[in-house]
Amino acid sequence: MFDSDRWIEIWVTITRNKTRSLLTCFGVFWGILMLVILLGSGTGLKNGILGNFKGFATNSLFFYADRTSEPYKGFNKGRFWNMRNRDIESIIQQVTAVEDISPIIWGGNGDKNIVYAQLTGSYNVKGVLPGYFNIETQELFYGRLLNDVDIQEKRKVCLIGTKVNETLFRNQDPTGKYIRVNGLYYQVVGVIKARSSNINIGGRAEETVFLPFSTMQQTLNQGDILHFLCLSVQMDYPVQEVITDVSAILKAQNEIAPDDPQAVGVVNLAAQFSTFNMLFVGIDILVWLVGMGTLLAGVIGVSNIMMVTVKERTKEIGVRRALGAKPFNIISQVMSESLVLTSLAGLIGLSLGVFLLDVVNTLLPASPSSGNTPTFFENPEVNIQTAIAATVVLLFSGLLAGLIPAWRAMQIKAIDAIREE
Image (tube, rainbow, N blue to C red; front, side, top):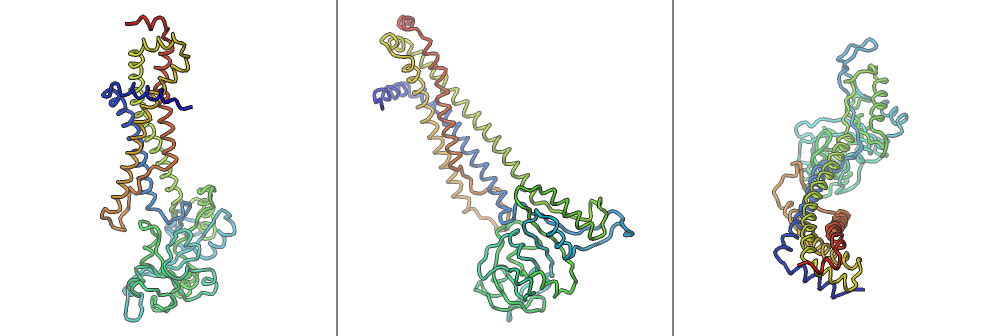
């Protein structure tokens, strides 16, 4: 049951020496404040850096043809080669860990190559499969994305980026209308913008016209050549194994030496994500170590003050023992005082830390920045799990701070305490 007399006594004891209590509380307050700010800053750094990759599949790989560096089967080193449609088919059949796959061919961005009525613009042209939009995800503003039927029937349809739509259609819905792309007419089926603003494949999506891969191969009249290959790997599957398998298929089908280290170029975005995740795990550990060290210093201060308090109240404790106070009563009294000091200071520090992070988060969007500029700090926050963890640590610290003084109080014999002057 709630004992009001006991809590009044605790409050009187704490406020008896206000200056000492305030200085003692400040150590815990500062420790938890620094812990919260450091945790929030670490989260802001993580959100900012990983936000630059937002919209890209975290398990994606990109392959491209490079010059050979080894002679093989009568071919000299330094040979140029091209990936072809048969390579895609073999990869799909033999590498079961591939989740999505899309080749890319580029159609150039000549001067005023995109035309609608009297309006023109110079933009990138890219041929892709529907799986591409699972690797570099897009925001769909109007219409739909390219689909398998577009590929199979080699439809003359296209997706346009928001910048293209702004130039040609003044941001109105262009679906169903026809534009001229590199001299040929295509029907617009949708308007898109990449979710990632700081990373792209061969040009920004909002400044690009996307065509079905099969249609573009036919119109370019370059046979079955493809310029780039994107794929994503199934979750929890070793990415390096997929790189090895895909590289082996490309080399075997294009007369390239199996040990040629240069001929097949690879961009491993999955490895970069993994590196960043490991980096932020290390930052989180460092933040907790620094924050806990600062908090520990404050807890030690509370413990020292409680030792002084116990010393000052030696006679009082002796009288209580003589009147029949149980050991638990003495221990709980001292630990309760320590817990109140620590919790009060810590919760104020926790609240102030969350408030300051919220203020910073509110001010950040107001800062002038370019949409094309990489962001390195975004949305600093402390999630509910971290707040609960900090609160648990705080309460445990309060009990820990009072443990030694409480044990010291228990060692005082009633007769010795009463005699002490």
